[in-house]
Length: 464
Image 1 (cartoon, rainbow, N blue to C red):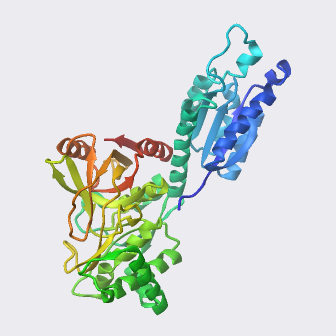
Image 2 (tube, rainbow, N blue to C red):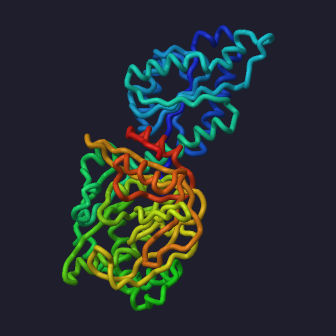
Image 3 (cartoon, rainbow, N blue to C red):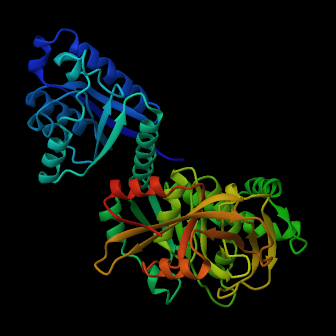
């Protein structure tokens, strides 16, 4: 579901060299083509080729601005003055990745002439460029290594994944349905700050918007949703086929809501009272929101918009991102039990998820079917989005492992997670960062890439 990033790629050199050293420019253009080929594997490339004058740099900058690129890559092919590099990145004002990638591991010092040195002179002007960018207020990062070394391109690939995730977030529309769970002060969000700091859009929705679409659900669509449910879930003995009618109808309404408002994610909660239609709607949301989350439209309960953002970022990295909180510490087996009631990212489950009937939603109104599953065993990452006292967003991440073993059978998602620190030490370190109490739980170790996402978004990042 992630959006392909559009990346501006330009190489740099000094025009005076071309007449002095035959074949140098053509050789560097070959290296430039290799760079563009690598980047084209994960992005749409916009390239002016090799820029060798200040005038050419300004034209490259105009191209990048016109094409609205999401990231600019400056490949340092050989020496160039910083004055002919800066104009290429000033107009668009997006993050810049400077590639200091040398073609050879070492020079043959006795046999290398000036032309050969210049063909491998990537390191020479990188400090100069870094200084100019910093003083001009250009956000930049440097990747140093060898041009044909897979390790270098692994790092660049992480930047590519980060660029895709950041671009996906900036172009996402988050639905906010209902209100935040009353009293959870950590979750209250300033919609303007989501627009202003992250570039995402928040669409405020009424429960009536969903109510009307549920009422309009066609019988054949409801039957199809029930069939999808039976193919996706195992039914606990507490759930009968008749119990699926209402949540399936609500799921059809949710599909229509997502379509009509072009939503890419959803934060929702509505308390409702005394069996009102809105209480019934709130009680029927878990199935449909789990199915939405599994197909890349994450749904965060309790109106936690910040965690919906974290879930969207994890999903954009292909890691899932399930709505999760801390459940309990296990000091016997050295892990933390984590999960939540409500929807989960069933696409990253270690087995077929279970639908369990609950006569009581703890702390919430209504009753109905709920989702129970564990994230697949192996490496995991948790990601939280919080805010500092001055209102700036901050991303928190930690890597660990999901362990096999028994979990709670209470109609909730829950997984046994072990981190690098023991349960008590980890909880203390995590809480010292003033997090919100929800996180996005995803598969794989993603912290390195998430740090790059934070850098591209211009937000603080802490790895616990």
